[in-house]
Length: 254
Ligand SMILES: Nc1ncnc2c1ncn2[C@@H]1O[C@H](COP(=O)(O)OP(=O)(O)OP(=O)(O)O)[C@@H](O)[C@H]1O
Ligand SMILES: [Mg+2]
Image 1 (cartoon, rainbow, N blue to C red):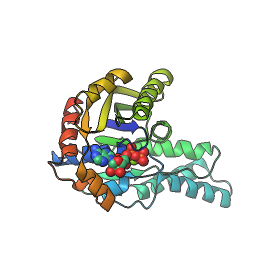
Image 2 (image 1 turned 90 degrees about the vertical axis):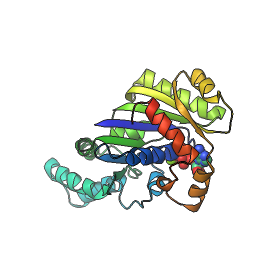
Image 3 (image 1 turned 120 degrees about the vertical axis):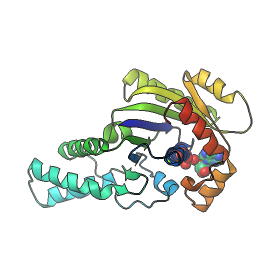
């Protein structure tokens, strides 16, 4: 199984990039089974893929905790059975990909057995796929605690803003110093450039990452997002999609 995680500042374009990567990869002919994971608690990936989420991993966690509280003591095996079964309810299986949303965690506290069982169940589920693409957040914690501890490619997205680049540098630093997320390759994507050649290389140098590529400001993305139209349906020759094709080639993902 190959895995890609997308991280970066809020609003940098993580979801747009994830949706466009999915589009390009599916368009080339599926390299096996693809799983898209929305690891952002705010959950913006589903609409970008044209889906509406009904059940998240967070919902399942709540439900299991509630039933354990109500029903008194349950054996670990009973809870494990419920987790395995429930997780399949959260998995949306479509023709060309499957989708899973991590969602929010509402009940505070450890509930360690439930958390551990959920992680185990997700780990087993992931093994069933050939490619997993995770739309994350800048913190990486959601990905790390709820989905997986290491990925093949970690893509950090930034826009040309100073804050975007600082966040990118912060993510790189966390990965390198705290080993929060292991990755075989870590690369920067500069999103929303408006003609300024060299902006991407400059940012990559500043941040200390290799540049996977730049995505131009794409009117179609703006239009689709404002209409609530799935980015998966972007025209193949849309500047953003064309750029993402190049990014995947640079990263040898496709
Ligand atoms: N290349 C682009 N051209 C035009 N608009 C873009 C581009 N990339 C992203 N956008 C717009 O910027 C906004 C943020 O993009 P997106 O939702 O992909 O970012 P995000 O990093 O996933 O944000 P969040 O942190 O809120 O999940 C969206 O409204 C989107 O339409
Ligand atoms: Mg997003």
